[in-house]
Image 1 (cartoon, rainbow, N blue to C red):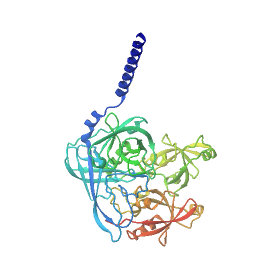
Image 2: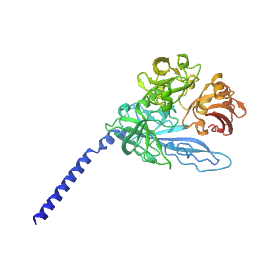
Image 3: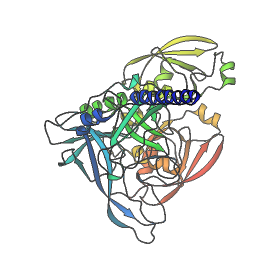
Image 4: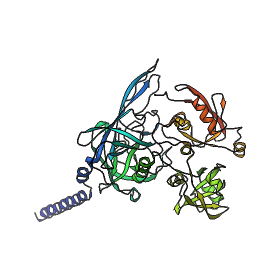
Length: 473
C-alpha cells in the first residue's frame, strides 16, 4: 500500500512538473492579438485591372512570369489558359496587398502588384474603395508608391529593419487568395539574402506563410512596427513551401521618399564589372579569406576608372562597411546618391589602400530616368542596362564588337529571354550592335510580338537566344 501511494505521489509530481513546463513554454510564445488589433486598420487590399492580349501556347504564372521560374512574385491573378490563332484583348484582374504610410493617402506596395495596371483600386479596412494613382514604381527594388484622395487614414508605425536578428518573431497581414486581413506568423530565418536578379535588395528571409495576394503587404516585428514588405516566395509548385522573402523597410522607405519627391530613384554607379572572390583567388591576391568584390573590368569612362580603380582590385569596404561578398557591393553603392564621394577600401598588390570615388548616376537614369512604368527609354523597354566596351576588352573577349550587359531588370523582357548581367550583346536580327545608342535605335525598329534572334557572347562562347518584345497596349 505504501509503495502504491509513493508511486502515485511521484506520478502526480511528474504530471504537475510537466504541466508547469508546458505552461511556461506557452507563456513564452508570442501573442499577436494586440499587434493585429493595432495594425490591421492600416493594411489595405489592392486590386488592379489591365488589358492583355491572349493567344499562343505559353503559360504564365500569377505575376506574368514563366511557370518554370523558381523564384516568383505573387499576387492573386488567374492563370491564363493556352490558346492559339488570332490574339484577343481581354481584361485581367489581380489582387495584392499594401499599407498606409501617411494620413493623407500615401500607400506602399510592390511594383509587380501594379505593373501595367490600367486601373488601381484600394479597399480600406472600413470597406471603402478608392481609386489610386501610381506615384512611381521602382522595379529594381520592387517598391511602388500609390496615392488615394483621402484624409485621416490609419497609418502603420515604421520600424528599423537593420536591427532584425535571425530567430526573431515576425508576422504578416495581407490578402492571400483575396481573403482580406489574414494573419500569418513565423520567425526570421536569414537576413541579407541575395536572390537572382535582385542585386539591390538585402532580403529578409522568413518562414511566414506567404501566398498569392500577400505581395505588397507589411511584415511586422513584435512591437507592431513594419520591418519589411512581403515580396517573393521560393516555390516549385506555385504555392508556399516554407521560405518567403521581404524587402527591408529601410530600403523601401528610401525608395518611396525618392519616388514622392523626384518621381524616380537615383542610384550610385561605379562602372565596374565584379565577380566573387574564391579561396584560390583570395590567396593569389593576398587576402585573409574569400571576401570582397573583385573588379573584372571597368567602363573606361566610368567613375571607378576616372578615380583610379583598376581591373584586379578587390573592394573590401565601402565607407567603413565590410564587403563580405561581391553581392554586397551593388547594395552599398546603390544607396549612395550620385555626386557623393565614397571611400573604398581596396586590396591591390597585397596591400590595402583607400581610394575615394565620386559616385556617378546609373546610365539608364542619366538617359531620361525611370519613374513609373511609362518610360519610353528603349533600354527600359528591354529591361536592361548596357555599357560601352573598349577595344582592349573586346579583344580580350575575342569579339569584334558589342555592348556589355551591366544589369537586367527582374521580370523584364531581357530576363525572360535569358539575357544575364555580364553578357555581351553582339547582334540583334541581322544588325550588329556597336554602342548603347545604336542598340536603342535597333530596339525602336523592332516590331512587338515578333521573335528575333539575338547573338550573345557568354563565358567564352557564342550563343543565340530568341527575343520577343511584348505587344504594345
